[in-house]
Length: 175
Image (tube, rainbow, N blue to C red; front, side):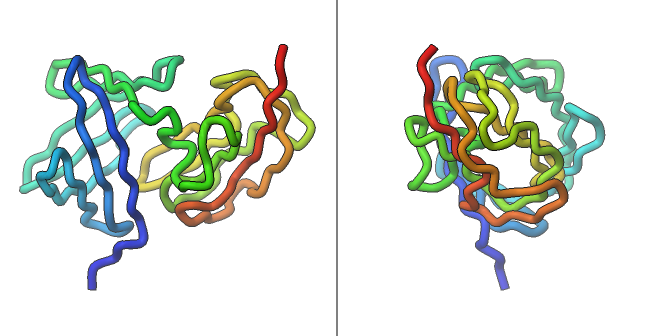
């Protein structure tokens, strides 16, 4: 029986071309639909910023670096690509109840909380790391979407969370 607990859709821009990625599943092998083409794959983290994707028996090694504006730089087989999320909530607000203006950091996929970097009452700056979680053997850093004050922290280190779980709520402040 196929596990469809995880469903995340994101839109990225690489250069001038826009790509739609839909991740489904939650167990191995994972499934992704990229621009309408379904791919089955396994992913293993082999270093802090290094992943190995296996699909159709072929392994591809990726090196990933996060940019300050939410973009990611991915080096694959000697070529580097800049992935710019079209939806600013990438990795932060997976549910419809989130959103940039809401300040609700929501788990976009199931995972385990590795670090809680903020507490209620603490002021945070835009792009400041707030939560670090692990999902599908990848480390995901969730950042503040704007300058604000942490109103709620609903998780603790080691906690397992489901996709759509409200992790942190931040109220905007103007400076």
